[in-house]
Image (cartoon, rainbow, N blue to C red):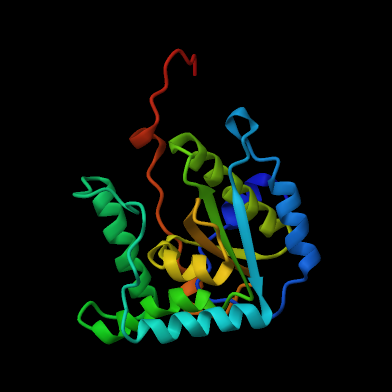
Length: 225
């Protein structure tokens, strides 16, 4: 598979098949992804991989806690800027509206929207769930490194016929995630990522978010044509 094809076919998969993913595949993906760029070669990423019974136990724990803490514990970092301005606010809003429209959930259907929100914390049925963390000493540059590492994982997953769902939603459960995984105090949870085989029949997986044209975000200087 070409890199361009992997990029074009990568989506945020929100419905996975229960088909197990071999450990060997996850190991190979992570082994290759570690070649992602890293300033100073710090390689600041730390990964926790869950599947099988431990994953089921963890998701059950979250489901129980959601009965009294529907919105989680609060993230340790701002997931989005406060007072998000345009065009970013509009893009985020449209993404949400397009998602619920794909699912046939109307704006006034609060219960339907809440049920879909809860699916985040079932990892959308993914048989493998990765958690990414960084040492608290790390700064903005190292967070960028982790992002490139994660992108490498997502593209390599496509090479294996797998799909992914990067989930910042897990940042809202830092205490529970850290306790369950045994993360030392010096680490900060960044996010999670589900990996598995996509359920091609699920309507939600037909969603394709829009991307802005080049003219909106690129300034070309000195090119001859």
